[in-house]
Each structure stands twice: as C-alpha cells, then as structure tokens.
Image (cartoon, rainbow, N blue to C red; front, side, top):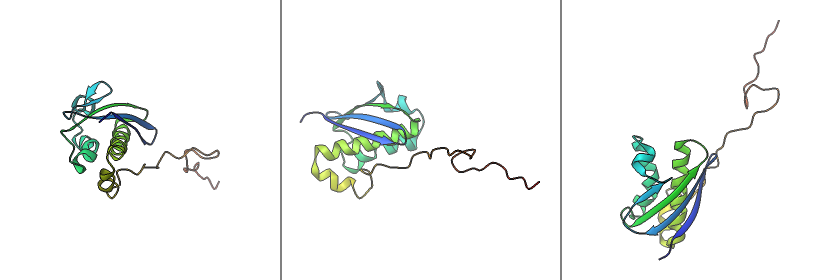
Length: 129
C-alpha cells in the first residue's frame, strides 16, 4: 500500500495529512503527538478518535503539517484529515467513520464584523438622552 494524502479543515486551521501503513508513529509539525499537544488529554483523544473507531491505532504511520487557527482547531482539522485519509485508503472504513460524524467538515467559522456594530452583532450602547 502506498501513502494516502488528505486535507482536513476546521475554522481557519488546515491540516495536511499523509497516512501510510506502519508501526503507529504519529508526527505532527516534526513533533510527536505528546510534545505537540502537551497535557491536553481530551484533545489528544479527539485526534486519535478515527484510528480508534477503525481499530488502526498501531498499524498506521501519520505525518501531518498543521497551520492557521489555534491548537484546538488544528487538532480537529487533523482529526478530519485522518478520517478522510482512512476513508480513501479503504471503503469499509467510510461506513464506520460516517455515522460518528468524522468525515463531515465542521463549517462553523467566525462571523464577520458588520459596519455600525462593535463586533459581528454587538451594537453600540444606546443612549436615550
């Protein structure tokens, strides 16, 4: 089997993911998962969720580059990219990942600021007199 490439996105974060059969080594931005995310255990679980669902934890090597957004959005973009790569690798994985919502791109992004407003929706303070 050859390497499979996929792109994952979330908010303004993008993750480029290369997936290949191997020993289960995960390299993100030149670091392993623990040094990349530090003590954020819940976010680490989000990243490996597609591998756990498809039971591929110890059999896939992942090399990823992430940029844009914050670490949480980057982690969710990485999860999306891993899911897309697994689905491209084997059609049977798609049936496992789709019901869990791992192949869906979370389209929620920051709303733009409108003129006459302080933020996207916050109006200036009203003064009657």
